[in-house]
Length: 417
Image (tube, rainbow, N blue to C red; front, side, top):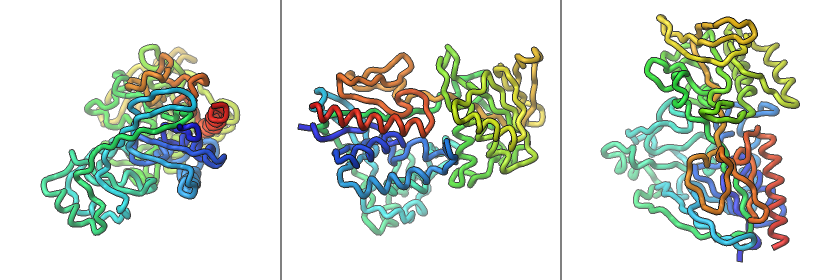
């Protein structure tokens, strides 16, 4: 029977928090994550709210708690395929994709040095490439390489096998299927950025519009371990921008895309304007907005951004982005306060793309309930709970609060069962 175990699905910061909170209350926890590493989206930020901490600030202490607690068992590259049963007695089928690198890996990097094949750097949202064998990022936990066999160049596999002195490469590794017996389930599957290519008027991903990027790409440009080592540079020519337009609600609050407010987009753009001001005090930011939403304590952050960054706020939804003759971009909107049409020329555009639940559009076990937008609906009767951005758009602090709550509710299910 699985009455003593809790399954946490999703190893981002809310899933990790739920897992360590439950384990430290002396309950056995199984944590699964579909990516090759734990930490989720927070890993990809330069700083996160409310204190503007770097990712390592909150994650490393939790990784240590995981390593030191024998009650936590975790699997990466793992996805749930089926769930049967009910509270106190679930049977969950999990498939683990092959990493092709075993636990002997020391992250020495010798395999990467001899590899010639390349793949798109998904951690940096396509802003660069990695080798076919790669460490997802420098703070990855577990600190183990991953092999993308589809990206290998001719002769790569032989070179990699020869370079590895620890017998860590297993090119014949197969998928594994596990059957887990648990008493309660916490869904912490997080969020994904809305697909900006669907916003055709904003030109993301279209030829000639390389300098239209997303807010998460902006985070990676500003991050010290990002593709430009923390320098905010235009993707097209690697020059320092002097003017940047931030386009709010790119996909959010739109019946044709995401009908809800994504909660943190305004704050993210204010934060990005501070990143920009730190690197280029003479630079100017233009924020095109519908409403500036800075709930609760974050009103102070809005005032800080106004004081420390050179921002012009333009109340109006962007209708189009066009190319200027010199390679710049022209952002076109109607200023609803003045009633005038605005055509603002800038060096770069950052789209504040909305937060979509990671499970939106994905096949999930039939037992799971979701709302019309793909957010998970908790069910106490089923012994299934939800936390973080699987529940609704949230900041990190609020995600962690919901994680603690979900852990307590899961424990109550076990106690009652």
